[in-house]
Image 1 (cartoon, one colour):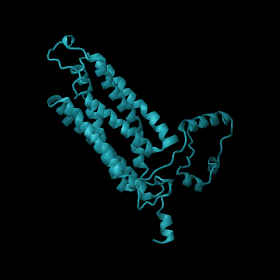
Image 2: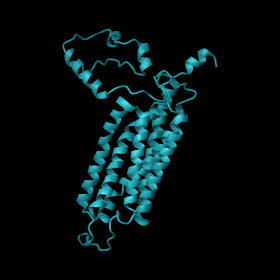
Image 3: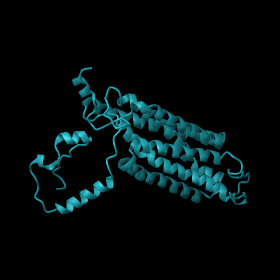
Image 4: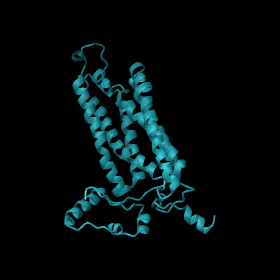
Length: 300
């Protein structure tokens, strides 16, 4: 490979390896890297929905809670899972980067799944059995048993906060938007990404739910935990092929700057020269892996 060819082979969107060195598109990224991400997502969705799909049934039949209370507890847990990604995305963008944030969060995620499996399997911390149809006649679940169970659920929620917002962006980072071919491949990646989500969800809502209802909760929760372990291992195997983007600073600070600038320039005349909208030269945008935002005639 000549010097000119080597220069063209480097990505132009600012992606680097784990040591911060520029990467070549022929050695890292693209589908060679994204295949690991897509397989991860299929197993991870299987693990998550394997827990959440039947959680109300477990709380009513095993924890002996009423339907309203069980539904409320599950809703609170799901709400937490959709809030923690805000923190996970902030940590990744401002401090640790997506890869390191994802790996640490995956360990927390797996710890929560493992605790949850143990809480439905080990005598003493799993809820007491009850053969009567009247829930009020059943032995109450102890404080320790509830603490282990809910501790596991919310440990899992913290873990998903770092994995959910970063795994899709890690996949998108494997394609250089400055290269026309890779830009097209990125669109195809998100098609396969959605397919992997639906496949994992379908498996969880059919096979795993059947196992929980007919075989037992130990197997019903143990299989999703095993699936998550496989997904993490698959992702780690792809480490030598990934492209990475460096932390770009707090997004909240950038948002604040835009708001402050909008108030300061509220009475400024409308600029007609499109070139004056961008304060940086085009080469600097490429080096930082960002794009100039074109003006719009609406919302002036």
